Length: 111
Length: 112
Image 1 (tube, chains in turn orange, red):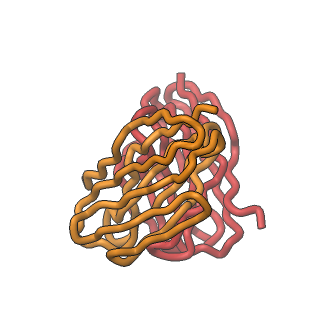
Image 2: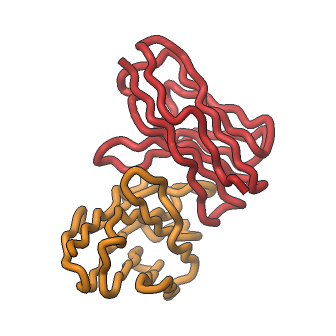
């Protein structure tokens, strides 16, 4: 079973704070790294799909970077808002045709 | 587009009963997946399919079966339900390998 580590497990920040999380994964057989945002009582929604070493992607206040050689990805949120409260999942390849999801980082943004 | 739809939304089963969780997507995606969400454990892959007629096991396939007779549908069958199968089940689809996955709304199943 592929070992995907996400840290921290949970995070509480104040509105306006910037924050970042880490996803670590084995770098062999890599083809894509996904980030998903999962709000309570909803379904996961894709944020980014990253494929190339050195990739940087941005969507509004959220951005992500990828290092496939050392097996990690960072997700950054600038100026956190209460609506950013969610669990953020990363998913590297778990085989040639499927992903393996990490346990996620649960972010709570206090107003 | 409705995206990925799942039925039922909720179900309570008695131990030993069987049921089928339905999943349909209207995006003409080749890949479809079944996950279960257990508290503190994230999403675990049960089965997946890379196209009609092709299915394969994920991390936790025991106690489940799937079929993929059409591109649109990917039902998950539970035979002889056990309390350990109490979970929230998500179906997802993607156009092809490595593309973003679109998730259905989930089915909350309780086995008592």
